[in-house]
Length: 127
Image (cartoon, rainbow, N blue to C red; front, side, top):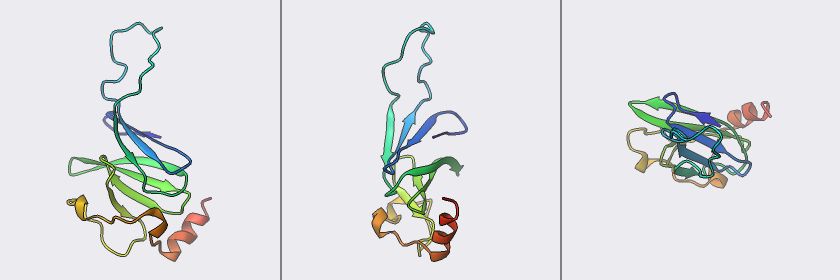
């Protein structure tokens, strides 16, 4: 789980590799009493499924006024996604990432991702 530096977005990950990005910018900021229980979720921005195993780490980063989500998983890969859930790239892929045009990004499924052997070795020592 992570919150971006401007506290606008919350990202949560699960054991199946699913990450949800929520808009928390104005969530729970009403003038209601502290004793009130909030029963609604914040607005969901996107669901990201770029991994085939549990999510171990989530981090937001910003480049050129755009916010991205970096995900590390037990499937021994690290991915970069935009807030809309588009996969920008996966650590270990053959081609260069293109931040400025996510429509040309890698569109492979997690089972077909190619990971460099040294990346697999490095990731396996962390588990």
